[in-house]
Length: 212
Ligand SMILES: [Zn+2]
Image (cartoon, rainbow, N blue to C red; front, side, top):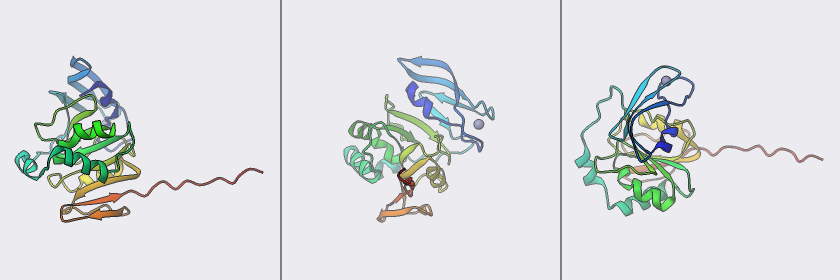
């Protein structure tokens, strides 16, 4: 994982958000290949191995690379769809692409100049300075309200959506599989037989009275 992307990661246990303290074992050209990430609050430990940060804990991840590959489209098309669905039009923002959506990670990060956290990406998806690979169970290890959008596919546990709700900022979007319920309190912008696109309510800004 590129060293700057590690700053985005947070402990997934239920306590006040904390940074993780990294002890590097192997770094190559600012890419962290092996490291221990320790939580100063609850002492949880997570590992980066082979460049991939692992927050999956006890969860056994399904072997579904082939199904994902079969369901994925051409990468450019997937990137265009992901960019449009998530309205990724803000350079420097962070988006989360899960499962088969992660095939679009590199293309989308270049097209939209965003950072991509690719969760449970198929094996052939490679990391870069703008794409970080993370294995998750049902918790996305990012700060609350820190991402522009999250897209997940049908091979995640259904409660990944709850975690997506937490990490998406006001006005941000979640794309989820039709088989999973869209989060309540979100506006459904579009849906078809495969996916729905939901938007978190934008922040209501109080306009203060002009001073006399
Ligand atoms: Zn912790």
